[in-house]
Amino acid sequence: MIEENINQERKEIKEEGSVGALIGSIIIIIILIIGGWYIWQEAKNISNLPPIEKEITIDEVTEIDATFEDSFADIEDDLNAIDLEL
Image (cartoon, rainbow, N blue to C red; front, side):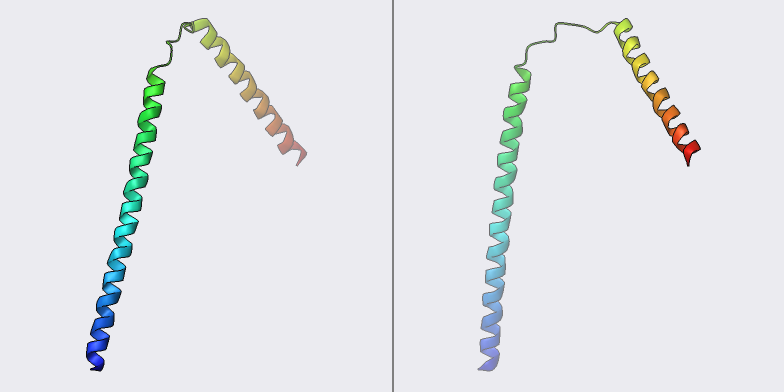
């Protein structure tokens, strides 16, 4: 009698556990579907963008690089000055 009750309780626990796993799996699948749909819609919007009309010349790229090189040199000088103060 006691063993039958224990076996029956174990079966009920197993059934409840499998239902929870099934519900969790369904929720995860729904989230993945919604995420995929969102990304697909965004990709369609990106492909509808107008083309870029202005091209960057080599001179502009060189000018931008020079600006960053100056900035890096200034940062390095500031760090060296801080090291000297310490």
